[in-house]
Length: 189
Image (tube, rainbow, N blue to C red; front, side, top):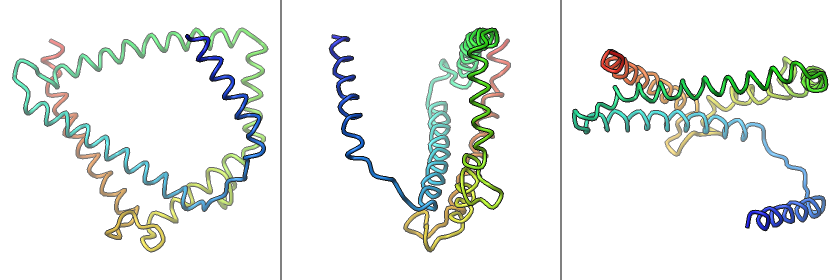
């Protein structure tokens, strides 16, 4: 079954690779549209984070005393640290192996050399006429522009939406941290 799926997948890749040049067309778009999409994504991610913290707060308020959610979240913190420690050990072993293999170290060196020799393409110049600098500059253009890039139908700017969600995020995180650390002694006694 797995071989059949793999063969089908490879056939699809070969087919796609064979017809791609015929279908290929240069993508073009407005940099401000990309900037607006990135800002919308950032704002949405913060809103989702706030909703998740609201869910935890509501769950805690509605759970029985025999299920102390914030005390038990310390178990999640502990579990994440255990998994992270083992993952760090794996990463350390891989990096140690790379550092003792001249072929692999040269590949890493070449990657950074390529990036450095293409820094104006990747990062862009100070005038932000290209690269990541251009993307960030375009975000600064979109943030206050409610005429060409309204955040929503009310005419709110991306700057206003971002400021609103950022203050909400700070408040949500502070409340979460207070509740979490209020249970520290109970979890670790």
